[in-house]
Amino acid sequence: MATGGNAIRGTRVGAGPMGEQDHGFHADRVAISYWDAMGNETIRYFAAGIPDDEIPDVIDSPHTGLPAGRDKDNPPAVAKTEPYKTHLAYVKERRTEEEADTLLEDALRQLRDRRGQD
Image (cartoon, rainbow, N blue to C red; front, side, top):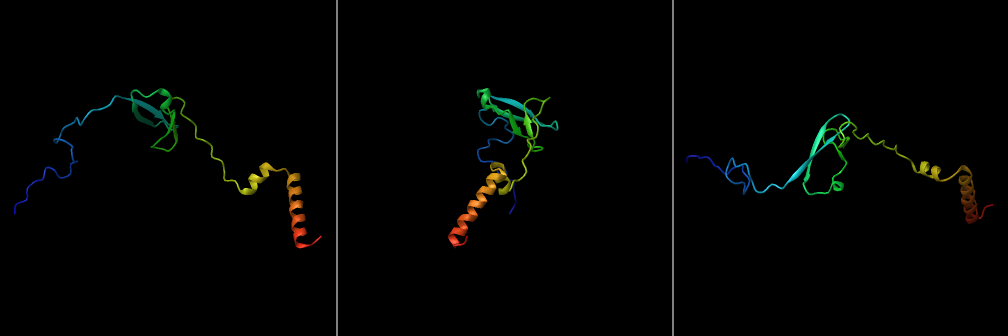
């Protein structure tokens, strides 16, 4: 049995004749450039009729993961990440030392009352 070439193998269904460049209708679009702090440019495409307020001012750069903005000369700075805080750190932000002492004394008094101690 002779093996012949298969012209369909490896093509998409509905792709049209091989070598055809125009596959359907292309909607009008605008190209917006974004730059990160390392000078990398990323181009994103948006529909031509989209209002300017719906086009994001900042995106995440796919090259570096840094924030990228539309102003080449002033790219956005990296947001400073807050270190992990423990539960105690959050409590200390909300309470003064005097309030903490009062709360501790009240809790100890209630515990002693429940146990019948003085």
